Amino acid sequence: MQELLWILLLPVAAASGWWAAKRSMARACEETDRLTTPAYFRGLNYLLNEEPDKAIDVFVQLLEVDSETVETHLALGSLFRRRGEVERAIRIHQNLIARPALAQEQRAQALLELGMDYMRAGLYDRAENLFLELKEMKLHVRKALENLLIVYQQEKDWQSCLKTAEELASLIDDSLSLERSHFYCELAEEALRKRQKDAADKLLKKAASVDIHSVRPLHMQAHMAMEQGDCKSAIHLMKQAVKKDAYYLPEVLPDLMECYRRLSDLPALNNYLQEFLGSGADVAVALSITEIISETKGESDARAFLSKEMHLHPTLKGLLHLIDLNASLPDIQAEQMLLSMKIHVERLLAERPAYQCRKCGFVANTLHWQCPSCRSWGSIRRKSEPEE
Image (cartoon, rainbow, N blue to C red; front, side, top):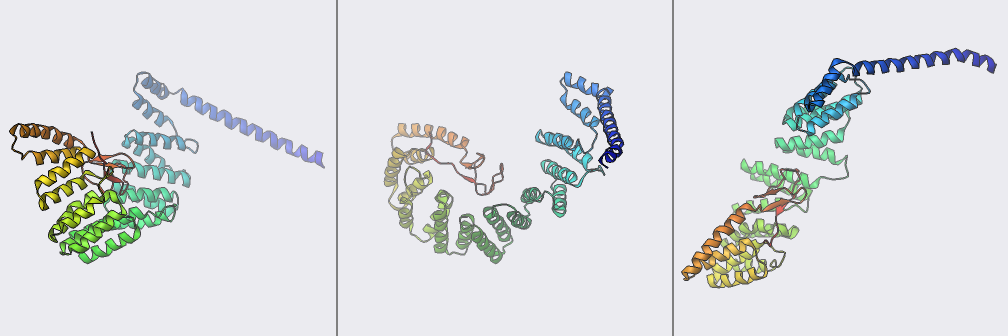
């Protein structure tokens, strides 16, 4: 019986071997034809003449889209996008999507890449549509949501940001509480511009509850309290913000000074600020104390305090302020020297960025809640001193 079975299987095996060999030879012939076409030699000529862009165009045209070359096309498109040649990347990925024989997974990957091309080109509406399509297809959902979040932030669509962040948080090991808190704050800013104070207050309470470490909602609530004339509540809120993040003190100092002036209680602010003096304190603390002493005790005491502080912890801003205090002295020669020094110090200060992102190192002259470079929320802080 076994011998009969082997006799029957021999023709089938022979036929299979012949078919496989024929297919392999056909592919080899196709590859040989492809590599010997005039276009192929034209592409090589472009490479030899150091014209890689034209060479790549020729090779892309030669590369037929099939199940074995899809990854190559995707890689080429991604390469073009990283090089800033977004139009070429879009053309390649659009060409892929137009192929009806493309598998669903391959089509989804091409849609994702095309959406990222559109984002790089600033075509956020088109990018949004593609990422939403991926979300409906339930393919590459995490990547689609991450990119949607970027799109909505660029468009300042904070409601959509909140919705997308909640969906994304369920897929990753991160609640995105910091980002969501800032989204609520941005909505509160919009409400305040429309004079919708009750709506803004509710949004800020949500922002504070979403991220208990966030200082932004507290400072915004303090601003609202100041506008209503409630300086005591404003001071309490700002002190809460500083308690959460001591590095934020220089940002609330102007408002603290204003509130304590309204209450005619600058000595109380002086006592509060004395706790922050030290090697790690921002120079704004010393300058604020100097201003308080000048108003309450006189310039002589203020000059003495700042001179001592600059001896311990010298900074450019502190020296500049000390120059201003000493410029009023009667010695004309000293005044001229100090004024000359002041010009150079002012120039150095103008050239030095005051803020830096803790994540990517981006520097700026003003506080940004969202880093323009890496798009991280709450990562930009005032640069620490002392300075040269």
